[in-house]
Image (tube, rainbow, N blue to C red; front, side):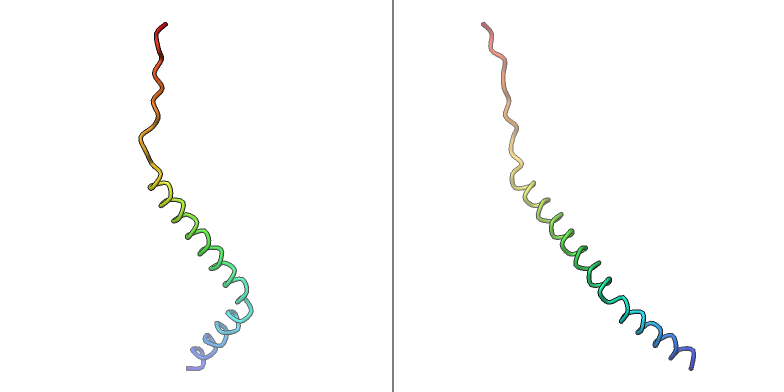
Length: 58
């Protein structure tokens, strides 16, 4: 039982010490995921048939 409590205490201390890094990681992950998703959606909306330039004869 004592081992279980010490693991919880160690985990809680680790989270408190690294809270800023954890929040920064999730913030960067969230921004990149949103950017990727928006870029993917915008690309799908603006996919049109390509312009074909034909060579004319003189």
